[in-house]
Image (cartoon, rainbow, N blue to C red; front, side, top):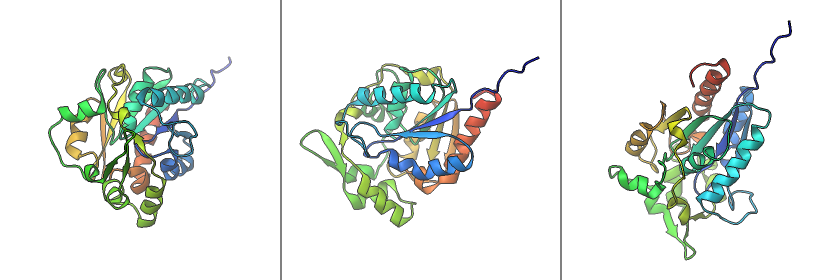
Length: 252
């Protein structure tokens, strides 16, 4: 009797946060490669190497939804990871494309349907963030970051050379992206994990803890806001456990 083919293994799709690009995931992807876990990272419109114009939340989500369909074309499950603002993007994208087996919010925003990032922040208890002081508003409604202040807010535990290289790659972020809500909250149906970062100076730990209650599982890393650079092995551990559970058919 012929045996059924092994199911396609999970693939990880990585979505960066505000001001960043696919470049920020390179070290983590190399670690996932060493663990035989396939991953892809996208540049949201106007970020990293993207030649598209800067867009809004919906343009970002459309691009990620297309990527979900592409990387899941062999029928394998997709583990969709959003960092920081990328949490809003993956929330909106997962409602638009099939094959998302698990949502991962990495120090990320977890908006409800009809709730923008700014509205979500306003609903949480006040907490200090070093990121606010780094923001520079531009006439076109976008923002950039002051390099020295951004280093402390985003890369406090990173190797100084790595942090300096990261700051040079940052790009403007449209303000409208933080003011638009996703049309649905797929984290209510799709298994999800929130990854808290205890030394995060951009998204306060209190806010992460508050948002983590919307997810099915919670992991914690002793890391700054950029664990893909400062806690690479620990971040890979979290994703490997999720992929293993999916591949083994265990509750995700």
